[in-house]
Length: 151
Image (cartoon, rainbow, N blue to C red; front, side):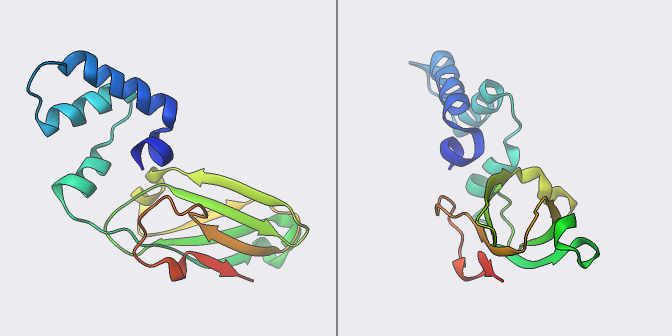
C-alpha cells in the first residue's frame, strides 16, 4: 500500500534506498525505518505508521451521496465520502458519467483532517452513473459493500 497507493513506486523506491544506504549492516529499530522513509520520501507518514504499527486501526471508507450543485447536472456534482473507522487513507476514486466519460483520481489522505465526512466537488457535464472507491481493491477496506454507489 505504501508503495503502490500512498507514495508511488518512484518515491517509495528512492526512500527505501535512502533507508538501506543509511542503515546497511547496522541494527535499526522500527522507528529508524519510519524516520528514514519519512526523510527519504519528503513526506510526514506519521499517520500511516501510527495507524498500521502503533495501533491496530481498521479502514472503512464509504461513498454515501451524490448531489448536483443547484440541482443542475451541468454545474457539477458534490460527492459525499465518509471514513467510518479510525484508519485514514487516500481515496482512489472512479466516477462514471452517463455520457461514458470516466474520471479516475486519488484524493490525498489529508482530506480526512477536516473530519470523518467530506464533500468533494466533481466537474461533470452529465449525470453520474456510478462512483467506486478503490476500484482496483488496493486498500484493506473492511466493508466493501459501501464502496460503490449506482445512481
